[in-house]
Image (cartoon, rainbow over all chains, first blue to last red; front, top):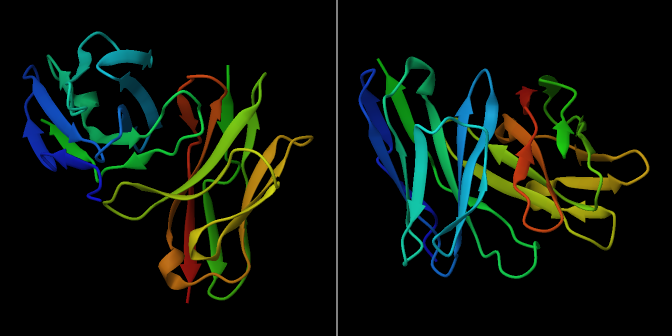
Length: 115
Length: 113
């Protein structure tokens, strides 16, 4: 099975711009979660989607948004970029069903640099 | 609410020596516990997980962890480390139901030749 893929792998943007990151989960996985990783804050949960519905949301401003498509692929969008948004954005998919006994599989991440 | 504390931000250890990376959690309900490893410029890879059953969990690359409910700990151990184990290790917890996963701040393991 192919793993979780994220595109693009690297991005450079300037303040005020917006960006869209994409994540393709492992085939058959319906849950996709997004995390922001920075040296100062560590791994912080952004949101989780399951069957096209946002199931959980972290404590991020409304500039951060996401969605999930019927094929389970997910996108996250950051509008009005700030310097502090520079980070590694990680996507994880899982085969979460009716129980919580699932494992998250992570993609390689998208490294975003905001200048 | 759930939380995870990794007590050591960095752990240096000589090659072939044993290592323990500490993790404590807090939660008002039963939890599922995970250890992940992150190599430079890569995503996270699952090392092992505790869902239920035996409190001693064996994972990949010779790592194991023991779930201690009374001490709310889930420490990661390896009896003999290799240079290739140099990486950052994250402990994570998920409470029951459909709660989000909470990660610790990570422990950088540096294996010294």
